[in-house]
Structures are given as C-alpha cells and as structure tokens.
Length: 284
Image (cartoon, rainbow, N blue to C red; front, top):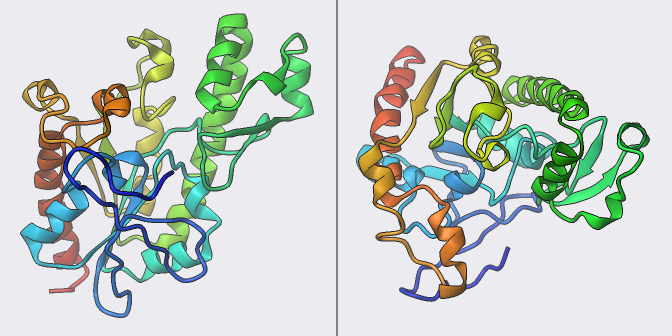
C-alpha cells in the first residue's frame, strides 16, 4: 500500500506503526497508555477512500479514543501472530473485530503474505496434487487463484472451501482468545450473513467476506460479548462513491467500497453495543 496523500481532496491516511508491529495502520497515532477502544479489521475498518470511517465516527460520537487497527486487504493472519497488536487489543476497554474473509489466511492448501493477506505465496503439495493440471506460478493474488480453481473444477473446489472454513474458525478462536471477551464481532458487508450456499450469490467469488456463514460467526459467540450486523441499507449503497476521495485511476476500486453513509450506519449500530459492553464490564 502506498502511504501518500490521495489525489482529489488532500485525504491523508497519516500512516503509523505501533511497537514492534510491522503493519502500517491509519493514523494519527494514538497513545496506548490511556484508555481506548480498538478496531481490528480489513479494508473497511481502515476506511480506504473514506475521510471518517466508522472507527473515527464512533470516536467523535462517544468522545473516547479509538485506535484504528484496520489493514487494507488484511485477514486474520495479519493480526493473530502479531504480539504487539494482540496485546493492544487485549488491553483495550473494548475491541471491535470486523469479520474478515476465510480466503485471506494461510492453510493446508496455500500460503498468503503475512501482512498483505491478499497476496498468494505458494501452493502446498496437497493442493498441487488435487489440481495437478494447474500451474500455480501464474498467480499473484488469492482471488485470481481461487477463481481459476473454481472454474477448473467446482467439485474439487468444495474441498478447498471446507479447508478454508475450518482454518478460519480455528484462527478466529485463537485470535479472540488472545483478545478476551471484551470484544464485539462486526459483520460489515453488503452481503447478507446467511447459511445459504456461497455459490448462490451474485458473483460468488467477489463476495466479501468470502466463504463466511452465519453458523461460523455464531460459533464464536462464547468468545465475544456480542455480534453486530451492519449490512448497509439500499439508500446507503445507492450513494456510491459520493463523498469519497480517490485518484481517478482508482475509480473502479472506490466503486467497490462501502459508501460514506454505510460507515455512518455501521457506527450507529455499534455505539449502543459498545455502551452495553461498558456497563457490563463496569467501565463506567
């Protein structure tokens, strides 16, 4: 990710790092010695192209320091093995964890880049045996690779999906266990949280978060204080890129992002649950 000012309005992400973590997060950098809320997640939490993503909106509304640990194209792997970030989330008054896709994590079949989890590194010998006709050296990005495998053999691809889901559930339990129960799961997506087959969705491999079902999320309920479903309204989605800041060359990427009003709606749904967490833990 480039850490410069975005053309079109002077939006700057003010990139910063915390402790020994190698991930650049959205700034300005916050003081972790004072009480704060932590927000952990992918591109939506980071707020790419958005002046005030939902963590900043929560901060403004509640008057509490909010630390944005969002990572563009980040998955669970970007955080679960990062002691600095796991400790920071554990020490937060409340940690909001965005549900991220099952495709962006290393598993028995393939490895992803440890921080840029959308990048494909290598296929295991097991996956190469399942798809022995595929040249995996052709792939740089995970979605491209998964799309090619699905097109080649939907039946064999079911094996891959099952592995990704199992790896995601195990990795999420690990991560949430490190964070502790003062955490809230956030489903922030234009997709419905459902147990319907993933193939039934429009452009199924473009869905985000990918391969996650309601049962998988509900299976984590013993590790969190609550779950918030923030699926943007039709009105919010119809806003498109209005109010976003992006270079002209990234107009298509911006159109795929959730709108400014989607972030406003998400913050409005989160705030009551965060307040409930404060009451239940006697923070206020």
